[in-house]
Image (cartoon, rainbow, N blue to C red; front, top):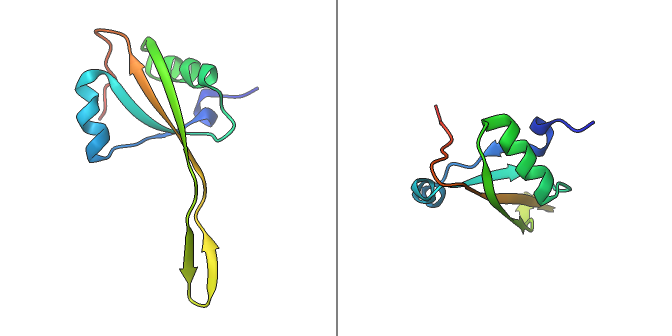
Amino acid sequence: MIYPQDIIRSLIRTEKSTIAEPLGKYLFLVAPRSSKRQIKEAVEQIYRVKVKEVNTLISKGKLKKVRYQIGKTADLKKALVTLQEGQKIEIA
């Protein structure tokens, strides 16, 4: 059984994402293998809001040089969740 907290890792709070919040759009860091349907159900269960639309994107990791070795940052999957009219997520 997959819990909603396993799908939604965190809410991303950047300057660009806070500009979209008055429009009812929130950006989440999600599990890499989660589907749009799973993300929608998890957000509805955790925050008790109605989701209108879910858009996802995958940011590929970059190569980084660490001392004398080459390393790679992790791939990230993000979800842009649009809420229905009148819905809002309360952020403490």
